[in-house]
Image (cartoon, rainbow, N blue to C red):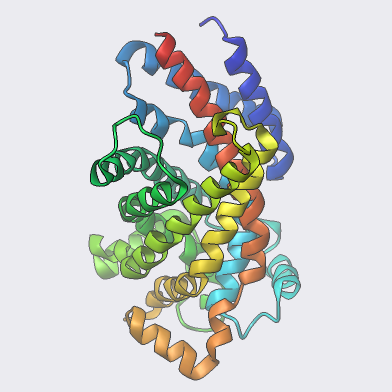
Length: 346
């Protein structure tokens, strides 16, 4: 296939950023090769199938989701550990040092494969449904199909879209959280020692609870996602409006886009972090037996550990949120522009 210079430039930019930020031993060259395959495949699909706009928007989330996970996975691992076992870790540095001494560097990347699947699946569904939900908001507000939505209306559309994303996120995040805290669960005697692999966790869930077992923590996931993504898209769109200063938002460069994505991520986590803490506990501690629901777990934590226990692990989450979501939106916006230009040209 003849290489498109614009696509090649975007691949080089994204691969360089991913290679520099990820810290994976794959290196920038291998990530670049992977992204080239992704862009080549998307381009061929656009040529042969004439994808609609919303379908194309879903396709470009693969590099966006990958960038988000690669930049943030170690911080996410420490967040889940501190949320679920706050008594074992005095803070971020203590958690980092103990994790390294206990299981080595690979301990920071436990659960990466389900995290990558979760992020790509969630964001693909989220942004695809975001387009549909924007049309619903336009219809409810009595606007034309091509009318520009306000920042508040975009936030509402993102909130509605997140309910659909939660359905694909919950099972993969359950596996991820259990892998990340397997060492603590075994050493505390809550579960017997076993193989710590993705497949072993999946088999354990199916054996104990059947297919519905993958939806432990669904109610808390919905309680986190729906209000959280209102603040996520609201923060992102408001930041883009601020940086645009009367110009079109589509003219913004990479730095404002990354900053806007980072602000969106910070807004999300500040708004719903206690809910996420309860979700992590439900999904992890249900490994050792029946776990109370959202209300029961919330009351138990506040009663026995205090309200501040709901904010365990907030620091690594804040550190992770800015670069990870900045990378997500930068990759999404630039990939989307490329694919939309190819679609319109066709």
